[in-house]
Image (cartoon, rainbow, N blue to C red):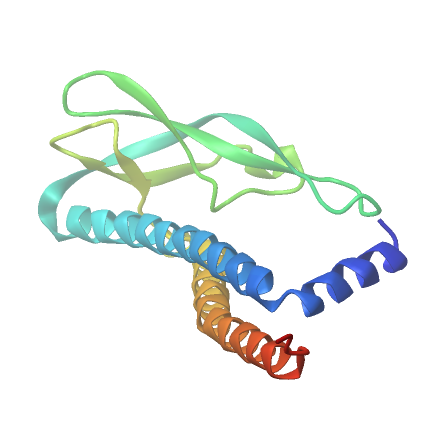
Length: 184
């Protein structure tokens, strides 16, 4: 769809403000839900880490056992970005060895991770839950939080704009009935 197609869609919506209002309301609601889920997710991770730091977890030593290749897709004209995220192994209090992937400390060259080890906070109630306990680890990553808040703001804005489209549609219908010829 080129600019001509986009222009015709835009013109069609201008002529149908009621449809535009409904589209804005539905889109706004869906985007708002994405924002709320994103904020909830990042808040849950951050609160769980704080709970473990406050004494709800045990400190374990994590050793690098490998990397996970993560490909971040971009726009069609920009090459994909390959990152390598460290996978650390730890043995919890129950004696079972588990692994955790640290998505906050990914690097562009795999060999940059060689020889790494980290301190982990492991949940004593559920040893499969663990977090890297270092300052560089940003649970509830900043980019995720920014995206979630942006979606929340955008969704709210669209929902606020929707009633104005309904008012515009009502005014347009009123003017059409005032101007329409009256048959006796």
